[in-house]
Image 1: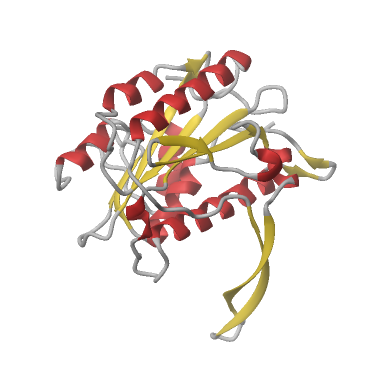
Image 2 (image 1 turned 180 degrees about the vertical axis):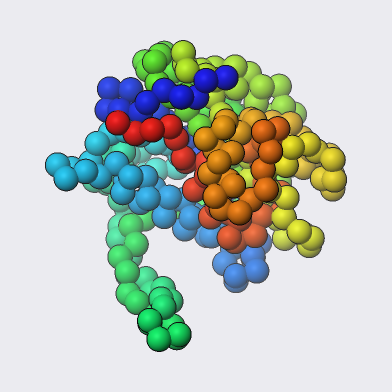
Length: 277
């Protein structure tokens, strides 16, 4: 396990977001939003953050290639529309240039005197929330493997791709574990694909964040997602520690029963990478 290649414009890395859009994602979270809408908001914010990380004085450098696959019913499809709909994986500069729209939103900010004030912000949207039908997880992982095998062939010396998979339900088209294992055998000279799994749940109990084993997970489905998750490389272990998450060298990129703040942390840690150059 290496995961140490420098990331540059000639040797970028890739992030592929795999998003469950089945009917159960209509369920509400504790913040009043549907799971689908909240995940979409966090994903859009993450795309904006990735753009910021790649912005230099002369413009945006294509350190990252990014794609989104949404899956529901019996299909897994490109989750980005408009000018980004023709292929799945895009350089980050193409993402920056092609939001579907820019919304005016309000957020609560510290007023510097111990209170809060509303602040208007511009919020670019690339990915819209959807929720209907079944959960064709096997089909989605198969499509992700095809996309990233081609990417790795084209970028053999790059830091390997990361798959960030968000789901709230059991696969409806078979057992995905072997397909996830096959996906994680694809890679570059620097290592194999990392797959992180986030379970979005309405269940009670404390969240489980980057565990080192499946002991204590409440059901077979949670244990399955843990087994489908990659071990954290050292620099991501450090990123988790910086956010106050107790992680060990055996921790895997998995969260169960994640709450709002944990979902934000999951996306942020999962999109960390080695040194940008």
